Amino acid sequence: MSKVSSPIPVAILGATGSVGQRFISLLNNHPWFKVAALAASDRSVGQRYADAVRWVLDVPMPESAKNMAIVPASTDAALAKVVFSALHTEIANELEPAFARAGAAVCSNASSYRRGEDVPLLLPEINAEHIQLVKQQRVSKGWSGCIVTNPNCTSTGLTIALKALDNEFGVKKVFATSLQALSGAGYPGVSSLDIMDNIIPNVANGGEEEKVEWEPRKMLGKFAGDKIELADMVFSIHANRVAVIDGHTVCASVQLERPVEPAVAIQALRDYAAPPSARELPSAPRPVIEVREEADRPQPRLDRMAGKGMTTVVGRVRRDPIFDLKFVVLSHNTIRGAAGASIYNAELLVQEGLV
Ligand SMILES: NC(=O)c1ccc[n+]([C@@H]2O[C@H](COP(=O)([O-])OP(=O)(O)OC[C@H]3O[C@@H](n4cnc5c(N)ncnc54)[C@H](OP(=O)(O)O)[C@@H]3O)[C@@H](O)[C@H]2O)c1
Image (cartoon, helix red, strand yellow):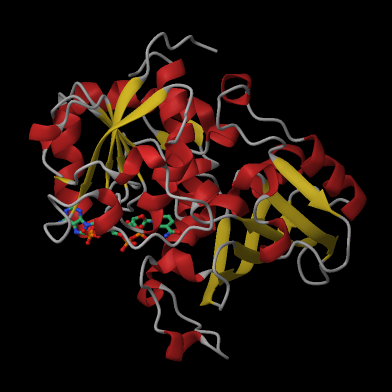
């Protein structure tokens, strides 16, 4: 692991939102990064962070953030070498390239550039080598900075579990249903009258399903020097919003090239290890995958904080009468699926000498 001699200044764009709050919390006392700027919309600019934010996390707001003044999300304020973006897509579309042009490494949660041919869509524990695309991006865009993205929070846990299975048995088809937490819709998100006593079988006006049907193919694809060859797999996803605060659950059935007994698949999931370059980073999940054997796990309330919210929890691995295997995956959507993901990506950039 590379040594970081003095803390690297970082900025958070969208610092008051659902993901922004996670950034503040996870970056408090981070061994490599120091928060230098907090940016949000005109509504918040000029206010103390503590006055502008409606803090919804169940951990205290860090003292260091409380008195920071919120600044506009403008590159004038960009002294930061790393910029964490928790902006909505339409704002990220414009702002993220501006920061990359100004020399910052932008680690983004937004979907704006995930499909870019020269933009890494990263989960370091499964595709750390894709980070090398940044070199191609810098040449093609003429930027000294870069944009690196993390996937949609529902793609995250599912893709990590699929990677362990794909390595050993080859994944051909995936049919999955998500049960997605409310914090995934940002704050204030879905109205209580819509979600109490209810399930909404539609997330992001259908856009969520399309993302989860495509993003894993890029992340499980092969790095071919200057682009990613998409994995040859077919996905069918049903996305649902449920009355859970944090933690996305996905129930998946998979068809394999080499069908195996559930016990063998469980061993492969347990044995899965991150590539060496991603194993020792400060935010690396330990373990990458935890397999629960109880008949009623994983559950969001009990399992979402496994590995400080970075571990993917799998359970109910069993035979599927239509495909080959079925199982349940749980991943913390604002930690592994959002802020923790961008921080892990930034750590990999630093380690690879790309910041
Ligand atoms: N929530 C999740 O689980 C999750 C997971 C993965 C990815 N994501 C993605 O992460 C991004 C943020 O999601 P979220 O759930 O955190 O949203 P959110 O709670 O609605 O927060 C949005 C943030 O953006 C700020 N903002 C709005 N307009 C702005 C502008 N013009 N300039 C600068 N800042 C502006 C807001 O500031 P004010 O408070 O001042 O309005 C707020 O800080 C989205 O792209 C989302 O799709 C979310």
